[in-house]
Length: 479
Ligand SMILES: Cc1cc2nc3c(=O)[nH]c(=O)nc-3n(C[C@H](O)[C@H](O)[C@H](O)COP(=O)(O)OP(=O)(O)OC[C@H]3O[C@@H](n4cnc5c(N)ncnc54)[C@H](O)[C@@H]3O)c2cc1C
Image 1 (cartoon, rainbow, N blue to C red):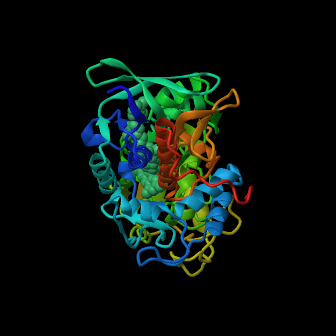
Image 2: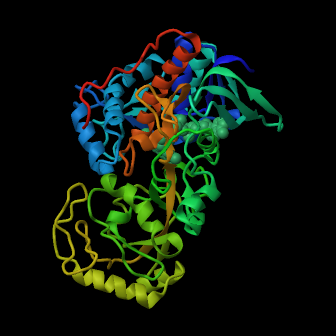
Image 3: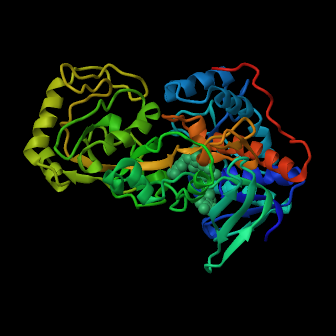
């Protein structure tokens, strides 16, 4: 297994995009995936769509989504905490990815009703992330890419000054340790959210109460190895994408179905029975990604959403049934809360609801008056029994801390050098463009665009041929 041109660590979208591009550019490629074959593909298995800039709709994507609008959206969610050059590069290159993906076997489908109104900006994978991954694996196989499953990269040796790749140590499913050499190395092994100890170091003991929505395999092993080998890190270890998930979600791999979308139609209290944030601040697609962190900041990292019968059909049904009771106090007690306290919170909320015209698809005028925190929209008193409740936990999707890269996805070293043959793509470098915040579908855009660049760069480094998709110099620095 040693002596290939390009060695790729990881088996998700970023890894496969890199492997396919490198193979198309004439390199012999080995993909090393820590998961067994049936569970290959990390977080990518759970995905539904990717965000693409485009100048006109194409029958599936509705209407144009220009690079400039995408950039405004990205700057909005990150608060400008993004590398401006890489952000622009990402969005410009995203215009190529529809053709690249379909050219490599991926099929897209129209978004369905209820899929967060993303039909213009996001291309949905026909059959979801697994089908998309299967298509990429099929293409990779036809191109001669080899895959070593149940094999983990545990160490990476680089020249500390130049960053030149020397070798990677891998351990296979039988515990056999081997040293692999290659002409170039691509790190596409995800974030570190699956590493409970690292999460605890970043967040404190609270992290033990978080749920990981995706694979347990993304434990930051390659990220830590690159750090030890002298790569420069970028991003804040506590920055991540996190959403509110059902408190009964499994510790790992619960996927998309454990997300709860009922928050705007009820109220959310903490373990003390007190509300802590405006549940109706904005449309759920724009706000769902803040609720993971909000819940993480509450006592015991848990929230409780309460709804009455009037609103129970307004949101995507939950995978686990809600707790049901005939009164608020009974509901609270069934969820382990103090009944009278929660009753007082609900009474205060009900009294503050101003009459208005309820309209779930608009920022309506049903708001509270004189309540802190307010509920700005969809505020209707909780009066109609039975009452329903769910516990909410912080569900981490992926972390942003990563290795710093340049426009070719080459890894930068703390020495100031840019590695001639080590590249990174996907979650492991997401922090270059995502300093904070998130835009739905961006994870797959980051993996695809930088995966393709990394694959091209790695093939060029290994074979000596010029890169086929060498990223153009910045046309307009800054954003
Ligand atoms: C429930 C859920 C839904 C999501 N939905 C979307 C969506 O619709 N759109 C979107 O854009 N994003 C979505 N995301 C985020 C998206 O999944 C990621 O941003 C994207 O898949 C990252 O791709 P990646 O290749 O970097 O990582 P992954 O797909 O996670 O792949 C990492 C791979 O590395 C392997 N690995 C880890 N460590 C090692 C090691 N040491 N050695 C060898 N292999 C290793 C893992 O087994 C895995 O195969 C979702 C995430 C989750 C959890």
